[in-house]
Length: 322
Image 1 (cartoon, rainbow, N blue to C red):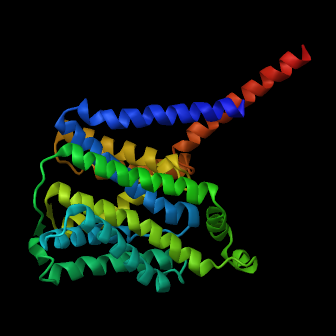
Image 2 (image 1 turned 60 degrees about the vertical axis):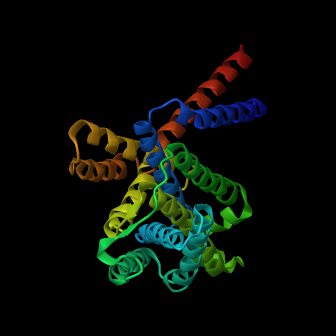
Image 3 (image 1 turned 180 degrees about the horizontal axis):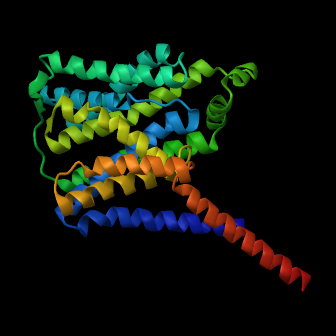
């Protein structure tokens, strides 16, 4: 039975992979842009989940890494760097920035860490507004490239890598076990010989790397960036809500949460135009999840799976008894 289940999962992943590959050739450019945006938010929510879901450190500053990645990519491309090289360097810059920021901030815990990361993000936004080489309040333009399929596949690649890294590193590897131990009891983890400081910085770096790269793809995709578009606090806020809605500390949680919220936002935009009603739904979603689904939407799938397992076991017992 476990072997058949494993084969079923592999077959499902193969089918999903094929669908994702052929998708851009079967939908219109309009819907492809929406799907590309959904992929970006899946990657962002997954990255934030590395830090908050698996390690228990809630960050309100991850939008800064997205914005820094966007600006680094735009600046480098303006200097003649090819996009893929600029994207890679943007990821490295955000990772290095996270290493520097993580050293002092990760000594804090709980609300103090959250406030420190929020202050960092706000500081980055104000800094970009006054720097001349970032365009200041005027923002920056990036050379255009009219190929929606290209952006879809690049966004898909970065997002898939973030999900795969999360699965193997945080779910299957010993590293993930140490990270979860820090989440449950950091002092006890230190007593067991776990170098909590090093691991926390490593997780912080990983969780910043992918937003930086996604920000770089976003900058090239929309061709114009501004502090109020790529460094707005709303980016980090949506990462938080998406991961919470789907389920913290799981693989599927951020994916489900990001798809539900982003696609819901787009549907509202299509039906009613640009409206702030989405923010009302965002707050309502947070309240409902906290009250009725503290483990997120994936807990519904887990409960259904558990009920099916109990039913199968009951049937097996009845057959054996008979």
